[in-house]
Length: 378
Image 1 (cartoon, rainbow, N blue to C red):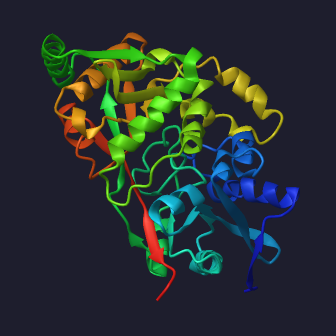
Image 2: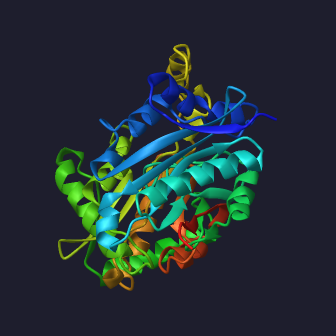
């Protein structure tokens, strides 16, 4: 068998190979939702990608016999390095044929890249974004992933662990919540929310898309205040929040992006968007010109589910009923718009606020993602 060569992505042709390689892995998998290539191209472009406002990255392709057999990205989030006082290599866009030798070559390249830059560990997976396709899917391959969630073959986790990566932090969980308003759990939530409304001065409102600058500032503040207690937390920068929020603005229903306020101060953020993967699974990632005709046809389809991408409540409001009102208001609005189920993803299994509330709502864990870290020294 020919040797494996790892080369950096430098040319436009190589970028195209890098971006389209997943089709070699998943082309026969009916549950795979192809990523939208125009969005991916923007993400990896240093001139356009939000990640590059605070970081830098290199992309690599593994070749064997003149054919691509794997990809990986290596990146440093410089804002996170400054906040922590040390740097780590974020690995992402990991795709690989079912051959451990290819994965090993990609991981060795990542280690060499990290050592050259004095980065203490490899950590991932993150596709140059904290929210987009993060983590390795280890459970839940019976249905397509929701929007912004990843998908991969089962052997990826085996390859990471065989190379010496260890699980880091809690798994990322995706919950499925039925929006049937007759369910006892939702009726119980509604009664509890009414009690909170009569006792507390909490306002829940939709997003103001005409004042996105101020809304983004509120989200940055809420994200950092709410997650600061988590082990190893790295503060969000404005660029990171913009990378997460601005793509949603194109498709968002502002009535489903909720803010909670207590005495006029931000106390919670709870955004939902239509689960557009129900559409994107049919449009082949817009890889070819005729795929836009598919998008035109499927754009008439209304998704049956919403994707809730964050549940953010600062610790000082955990016992005030803010979370209860946010969940209740979201479920009522979603039901009124005809949605049948909600994806809640990703939330850490060690999140002290989301876990108990999701279970009281009768939510089921339907996907589990794992994050890995490996020291580059010693």
